[in-house]
Structures are given as structure tokens and as C-alpha cells.
Image (cartoon, rainbow, N blue to C red):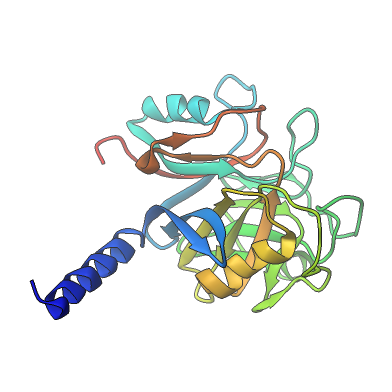
Length: 249
């Protein structure tokens, strides 16, 4: 086989791989950082938040969500922890599920990562999803079917959070969500190694090319991705965010 033909086949393979990754999960490397990205189309995919199970308890684990969905002929295509929570696993910030507000917006600064303003809200509407800075969100409330507030923002209008330091020594496994300008492309990311906030923000801005991104959590970060034969298990979770699909897929 000629070098030109081999190069062409390699090119076709790369295009096919990227096309398959348009919806679903893939492992990636950026600037030496290993991470997993799961992409959804807000116009066609069923993106939801889950907190309380049918019994009234918190779901807490991906397997519990899957079990409840199975009764409806559905399953999680992929999922991750969906925002910070208190010891009782109630959301720290604003939370909407199935159009019902469960927790109000927290607009003020506070301790910890959540209160490192600007923070933001991930909002899922009927045909789009957006990461929106909290005060902007609060001034002009969109009609969210699902929403979760967390912080800090990672990328704001294409710029990294102003408090992120390139030489920071604070490293954790982290997860977050980013959205495209038109609200159709949603990318959920979990790092496969400990990273700084600055490094994490650059993954969204410089590798994935999304103008808005929100930090979801750090030490509890977990991913459920059957496509990659992965379902992380650990401490009990509060909100869980995921894409739902029919069992037959």
C-alpha cells in the first residue's frame, strides 16, 4: 500500500472517529491532560436532572436512576454528578426539575468554590441548553425544564474566570459542563487526572471550543458511560445529570 493511500485511510478513520463522538462519550487528551467528554444535542437528546427517587429518597447512585428508568423502557446513555449539595444531599444552589423549582437562586458570594463569583446556572429548555452567569440568569429567567446552579464559571463569553491562576497548585479531578453559542451542543467533561481550575477551563475553551462552561464539582466527580464500559461508584450523590435514551438503543 502506498504512503498516500495509507495516509488517506488514516484520515478517513479519524473523521469517522470524530463523527461517532458527535453524540456520546470519548476519551481525549489536551495539552497533556487526560479527560473524558460526553456530548449531547440539546435539540434532539433528552437531557434531565435527577434528585428524588419514586420512593422519596435521593437517588444517590447512577444504578438507582437506571433502575427507575428501566420501568419506563429507558436508560441512561451517560450521566455525571450534577452540582454541589449539602450533607443531606439537597442542592446547594438553584435547582429545577421537571419545571418545578426546588431551590431558589443564590446570587451572592460565599465560601468555597460555589461562592467564587461569577458562578452560573446550567439551564435545559425545550430545544436548547445554556450555561448562564447567575446574575444574568436571575435578571431574565429563561423557561428551564431543568436547571442546576454551581460555581465557579469556568469560561465566560470565551474568557477564563478572572480568578484562575496559571501557576495554581490546587489540583483535583473535576467535572463540568459547557454549551455552544446557539445552545444546541452540550459537552459534559470529567478529568481523568487531577487538574487546576485554569487547566480545566482551557479544556473547554481551547480544546472543545465552547464559550460558556460551568464547574460542577471536584472531589465527588463521577461518570456513568456505558459506551466506554465505565460507571464510577463512590459516595452518595445529590443531583445527577444525564441523557436518557430508549432501552432498545
